[in-house]
Length: 282
Image 1 (cartoon, rainbow, N blue to C red):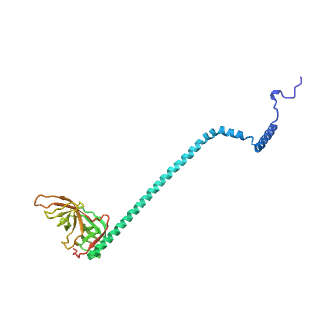
Image 2: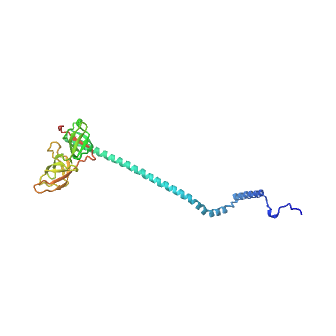
Image 3: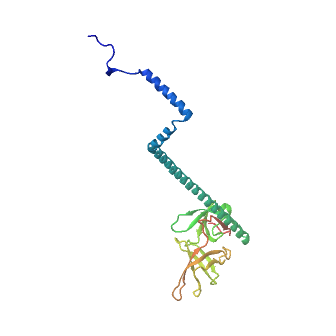
């Protein structure tokens, strides 16, 4: 029996691969031409877009979250930088305002000192407080005027608020000033409201002084103004010294305790006026 030359039906391949490819390309070209002319694929695309929309959106969620998180972190960082910048600017503005306030205060103090100088027609020199002296037994400050400016021991020192103290030691370029609160400084004073005289004496470490030897019958009350009496021949009459802060009665026949606080401050107002009285230096 002769063998058959044709393959059995199980192995039949039908059309060749090239023919199938040609048919597919032709069909694709035909569909593209028809779609461009009559838009036959539009319903299909619309339907597919509706079906695929949830899938596409779900796939875009991680990307959208990453973009949102990045934008959020960037916004927070920018806000933090802005807050730091505004804080620094506020500090610079505060420093500028403080400096301007200090300059304005010093200028006003200088003008008032010049007016006092002209009104009293006394030989004087304007000085600046350089520092406070660390001394547990006295209350003193150092000013930048000395022997070269004809400053001498005993010269009164005032500012626009009133009496500051008195020169206690003189050097060629600087001088020490004993403040009203120093125990060793005594100034003849007058209380206009009570019409009495007395002598001020510093309280030492406390920023204040007491009025000694006042009239036993005097009616002194808190807030009374204290001025210089001029009896010592050093301080001009009527300069503000301080105001009464405490009055403690005493038994009959004894002087009452009168405590006062100075009106002149050397903390903010650095400029002072030294009235040259020509006291002898040691």
